Length: 191
Image 1 (cartoon, rainbow, N blue to C red):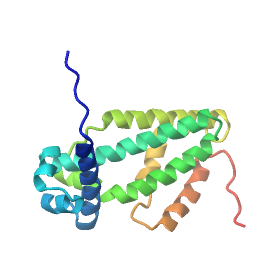
Image 2 (image 1 turned 120 degrees about the vertical axis):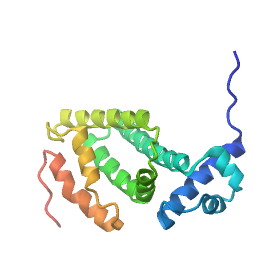
Image 3 (image 1 turned 45 degrees about the vertical axis):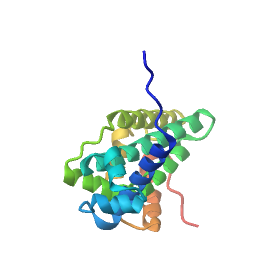
Image 4 (image 1 turned 180 degrees about the vertical axis):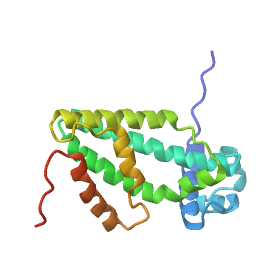
């Protein structure tokens, strides 16, 4: 039985640089940005880019999958902090803020994925994120901090209405306004 070799360190670095450059270039120039432009921004040869991602659709799908993986990792990290004694409501609030900020920087890549018909292979990552969110919600409900009727679908609904195209101050205000809808506590009065 032959074991698969781990990717070389330079291949991993190149892939990371390509994904980062693709996200930045798509955000700056839209889905029509050329692969050669992405390769130049990543500091790699076009052939290197194509070895990792044979088509632009593959590249955009990988960018979106990376985004979903980061969201899932964040949600699981929030669960681990709750397991260590953190309040679920605070972790949900932090998760919402971080995910909306991350979405703001990945919005163009998601639009490009739709435009190109990219089908990110992220269902396992989406399942991880959903399971972690469900655990966070249950912990918050058990602590009496989150309304008993709040579901994972509600969190996704909030994300769909988040002002990801707005500056940080608007996104922070959005969070201040939506959190009371999740909690059992009254909205604090402004100082």
